[in-house]
Length: 221
Image (tube, rainbow, N blue to C red):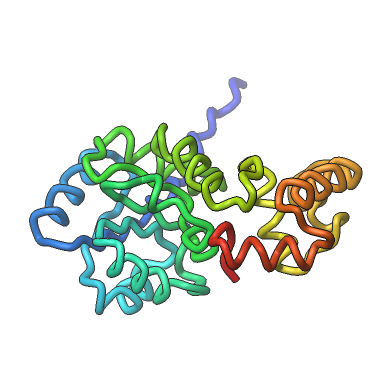
């Protein structure tokens, strides 16, 4: 007897990504909302800065897209600090190099794009941040590295992005072994990077390097 064909098992739909847009004007908010709604799989809501925490409670977990003046963006990032409902923060700015700071990274910013971003760029950045990656405007890293060079004492060579990341971890009190595990590299490689950081900053110890980094705005505590 011919076997009965079992009905196909319905596939579970992937949950859509919640996006909370916070903008400095209704016009900017409407533009970003339209850009995001043109992409499938995104649930978009617009929030005023004062309502941000409550909105996130309603849409957790969520990616937050900030399109605010620098001072307002800094206040919003402080509001977002440590909230478990925040999956990642995408910051839109007319000055991407100035927005990609150590303090912004510490407050959860994982993408910095221009404020005239396209739908494709914004969707790609959101996907990247959800995957644990960083998405930057092409000029942001290059120019911010040049800015850091001017902050180094005695004309010292600027730290590389990897060295800046390790300096931030040093500031958190991480050992070489812990840093190695976090970055997926060997302890010996971390030791090499730490030695390079100390040499470039003219520091005699890890503590002195961290202190210098904080004082000159390379990292934030």
